[in-house]
View 1: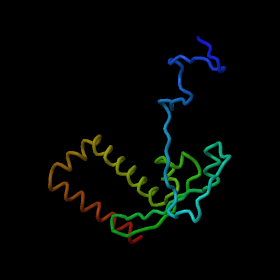
View 2: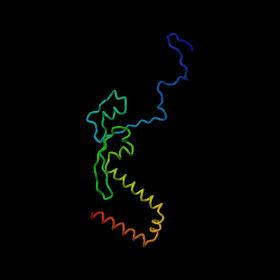
View 3: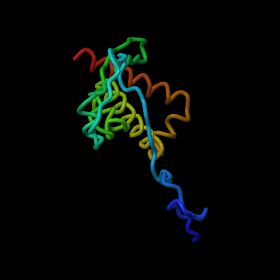
View 4: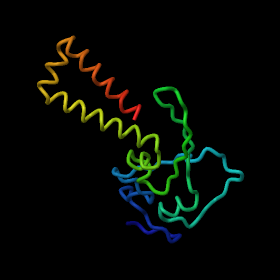
Length: 147
């Protein structure tokens, strides 16, 4: 290295920059988590953990769901941590989504039964036996509704 008269020293070009790159396994997400715009923007300092951010801002979102008959239903989802953004976290907060999940699971069980039940598959292949099976199912539904 060469020394200069004003006290500086030469720095070689192979020195890394002072700003480090974001690691490849990191993601930064910024999103508006509430429906309401802030009354007055504020600068918040000192929040060092994600939990503190959720405690400070208490994000929530109002959603409108529509069922198969066209009936709409309002629900509010509250986010208290990152786990609330997953399927399980959102479903746990919504009665509507819990009912849909239960219906999905029941239909999957029925499909599994139909795939593994040879007698049922054989009955469904024949149009006459299929109609008789449907008639008996409708009769059972009517009986349950009357009870």
